[in-house]
Image (cartoon, rainbow, N blue to C red; front, side, top):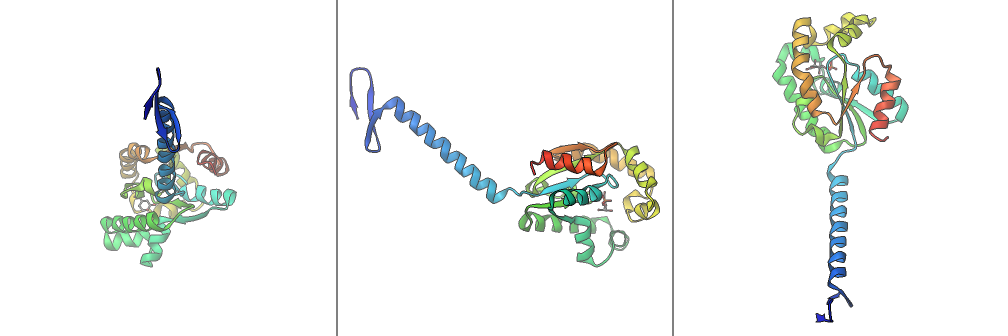
Length: 215
Ligand code: S3P
């Protein structure tokens, strides 16, 4: 290090530069290192999945199928995975084992998805949003609609009776509404993106999701 009249000179590698420039270079190098570490961590730990959450009957399955049609993404459904793990329907699992058993299965599926699945559209059951570390699974997209719209959508469906029968937590409308009121704020807390689906067709909803998740 040597001093001239008004500038302190320091060695930076083989070059002799002003202290001000050396500080600037160090700052710049630190920034590059931080950015590189962030990119490595992001690509190692962050998943590129889309995770669809929302209340029973809001249309997660139908929207998932439309996203697949528009983007060619591969899709999985947590309820389907559970049914094939158990070789019985959700309704039967609830009736024979009870809800806590089903929730434990959801947690197991969540762990597997977190560890093993990427670049996939994950459609979930209405209570799946409660599993630990949901956001580590990918971008969480909430499909939102008022309860009345959801209920109307179910009863207008040609298979309305079957749609209601297969959902153990949608057997009594008052209880379903209370569950909706309890969950809606929690869904919003978990979501990275909220899509209001009221009055929109599946094609429009899927396009909006693909755009907002930069696909
Ligand atoms: C549930 C929703 C169902 C299914 C199970 C429990 C819930 O899935 O996972 O009956 O807790 O809201 P859908 O949201 O596809 O109906």
